[in-house]
Image 1 (cartoon, one colour):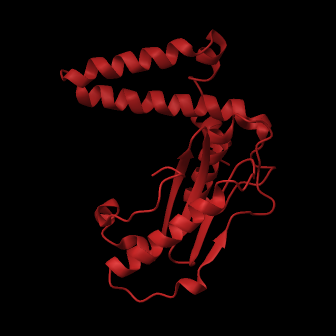
Image 2 (cartoon, one colour):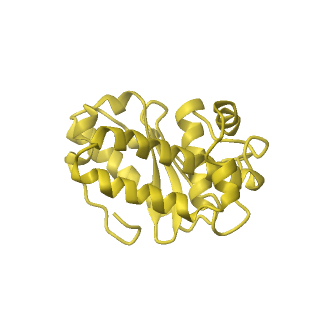
Length: 196
């Protein structure tokens, strides 16, 4: 679904969740043309949170409206009682980190998602700010490469092995030598520091 699409519900979107999401949260990244946001549907706290890293509010309201329709459909599909009027829609949070340029939205949305999944809150400016952007980009590259290594080991001898090898070469090749030397060899302590 893009921001310009009309909302349509499909129970198959969440059938693999086994309806356990009614007891917790669904947190995910949202991509709209040229931009990334984070959305959280908290069934436990009866909240829909949609946050834009540059706080333009241009997409947040429409996404929140679509997610509200999704919540209604999920309850009705599961034949559960609900009162959508008690649900709170949040599109702004005080004291959270904001991006200060127009190209780091994916990083800020990813960091917010990671904080939500670990701590059930969003990072403050003291915990993550624009100055941390470059370090977190390198952390993400390292995690992608580690994931590719796992896939490579599992796919040895298959046709997807060559495809994954080529993807890894492209990612590593686009890094500068300094990034390859410093970013890819981050220690566990350094990675943990980015997550704190």
